[in-house]
Amino acid sequence: MIRHWIEAMRLRTLPVSVAGVIAGTGCAILTGSFKAIPALLCLAFAILAQIAANFGNEYYDFKNGIDKKGRAGFRRGVTEGEISPKAMKAATFITLGIAAAVGCAMLIYGPWWLIIAGILIMCFALAYSAGPYPLSHHGLGDVAVIIFFGIVPVVLTWYLQTSSWESVDIVLETSVTIGLLASNVLMVNNYRDMEDDAAVGKRTTVVIFGRRFISTVYLLSGFIGMAIMTPVWLEFPVWALVIPLLYLILHIKTWFRLKQSSGAAINPLLGRTAINLLIFALFFASICLLK
Image 1 (tube, helix red, strand yellow):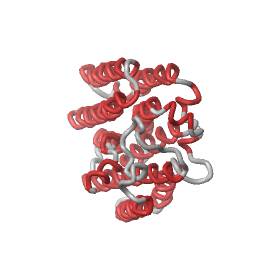
Image 2: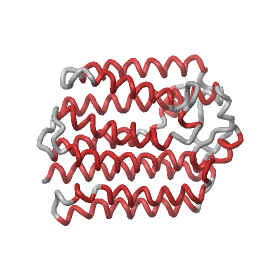
Image 3: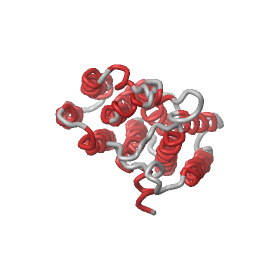
Image 4: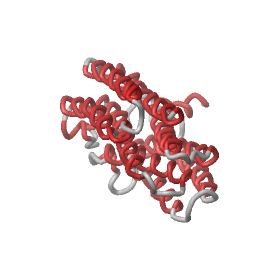
């Protein structure tokens, strides 16, 4: 039973939420304003919000008839009959409630408008798969990921530690890059599920534009992300350019494997894409610490 719940958390995707907080903390370090407790609160909130989104995605996709048994993607406990829909729905809102409690603790370190930001984030966690216009069903999932796994966590993590908008341009450039790299994880997921999604009317960007186009976008996202951070790299010694170079090497290697894979063989590449992002965020935060 515990194994089924761990599977539902989709641990391979959690580096995406962790990376945004690490990158935001790196920006705080770069601007001389690192604070450990706010950073840890942001990390806890981000992980809980993503787990809630994963739970909600499983519940609402089952409810809407999107999932089916024996799918190529990761096992879904509700679809396979291992977790009841009622239990999954309850877990979704309980996890959101815990995330809300962590968010309230952030108010010790930040202004009142963080409440609005927290509400929007939790609404996104549900709107991705639920509601009258699920974002993931209408080709908007990628844009939502760029915003809520890139721009929002990086900027808010940084702001909660600095309480200032000084040097926000550097932070925004970093946040867009993190968002682009995070959206690649979703692209891999949808790349694998294209036929299944098309069959049930779920119009992801891969269904709309096709695998060849999206695989090219996947590749370009990495290069564009590194280019966007050019002003940030100028803040460091030349040797720091080894970090975007390392990321691109890992990124290209994963892209080649993606083009040659199909079905369940793509599952490890989803985790690999998430780990590539996490490695990039960790190295970025490290050089900020060394500067």
